[in-house]
Length: 217
Image (cartoon, rainbow, N blue to C red; front, side):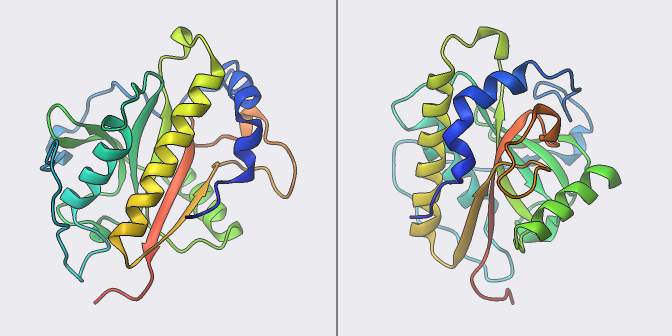
């Protein structure tokens, strides 16, 4: 089991600061655009499924979708303030994807719904963040904060984050052949406590990067 980023230790207080930040989010989770870029998937609810293997991809879209479903929607916990967002820098890493960008996980329609492209400014920040943290990955699961005005307890939000992160990490371990890194995406360096303006992927607060243990064919 991987260690969760130490930055999560101050998350309850940090979330309050972030919610008050006068910063335009990178995207709205309920936005709709470019429907032709949506990617359908198949999830099996209530039963175990064999993972789909293809050595030419990092992971199959259905396998990834199943992992997200198990982590967010099959935990016996209602996630009121957390939404899974797929971050793709290289679309060739997951089967069925043809465009890089940000995708919202839609369990009802069983699809990854395209939200927006990653412009050059955002991509530059992401690449700098990955390089600083020695991460060689082009795919991540983002944990996005939603319904901020309805939050009653920030501690409950932290529980949601920790539950989802732990479950997703366990599933990555079970899948095999993958390495993972879970980090708060900020521009703060060293032990400096991030400020609201440092969160360059807002409303995404946590990023869970995955990469192959061995080169892909």
